[in-house]
Length: 413
Ligand SMILES: [Ca+2]
Ligand SMILES: [Ca+2]
Ligand SMILES: [Ca+2]
Ligand SMILES: [Ca+2]
Image 1 (cartoon, rainbow, N blue to C red):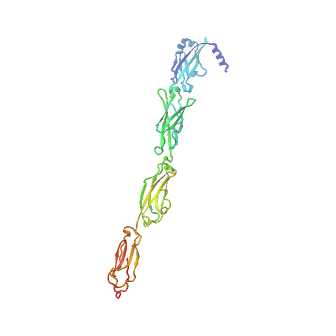
Image 2 (cartoon, protein in one colour):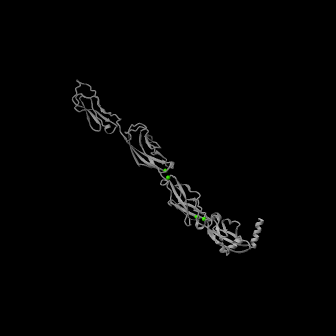
Image 3 (tube, helix red, strand yellow):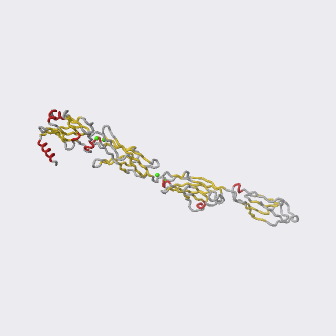
């Protein structure tokens, strides 16, 4: 210890302690503000203050307050910031002595500095971001940074609010050191397909007068989960294709949509019919759902096809639909003449309407394309008679005379 200081302390302890006085003032009073009428409160006359060269002695906190001997008062000398002086200690005070000489006297002065609400609660960051899957379970917790308020007691933070409170609620836990753990808890499932980004505001409020608050933005980006299956725009599609259409002809296109994002909505199309000729006849573009002909279609073999088509997303969710393809006929078959029975030789005295040949005509096409007309060359003593279902009979139409004509060549058209 400094020898001079040691001497002074010894002198102080020898001097008579005449009394003490306490004041209480709020922090942040303007310079020159009155702290207290020290002369009156200590019962000292003004001239004694002057003759005794009254002064403040403080080992630490003397600079904040000054003694005005002429007026006998203590005045604020320097700005008193309670937060700088005492930080978190609720009880904050300045202690010093008033010393007089001839004879030596000293008085103890305590000035309690009360807190004013001059600090708003503040968050370290103005915005925090979370990336949370829409599949997060109810009750999932997300820690938020607490705010800080430099003031004490009522002027400190009293409560937190989180808005809006649709998906998340606030949960506060007291730590042993008096601080709070602030977290938001998922209370309603997230749905990226409804809301991809959620903005919330966390507000910390103190209990001062006037009340002050601080806010922090919370931005939640909802990450996609594969919670939607593909859906075809129609359950049944219809298409027509004319037979003999060239290979590669687009027959139809099916479309499915998926409400998810990225690969969770990437759709692959496929034909699901198992085995059979259908798998060879049609091919589907797995990316765009276009169905093309892979081989020639013959109406005479199949008039309609029912194709079962599936859509699958990358996550394995599926939907299916039907495509009915009707085949349109084209006139691609010639009538075919079949001779059922024939007599190459007939007697010249054969009766009228004697059947010489039975024929059946077949056309594989349908409708008008399959209708047949049948005729024979003229100037022969024969007639073609229609019976039913494309059956015809060639019969004699007039008397025959071998001596005039022994042979006839008949063309059926
Ligand atoms: Ca304060
Ligand atoms: Ca405050
Ligand atoms: Ca999906
Ligand atoms: Ca989704």
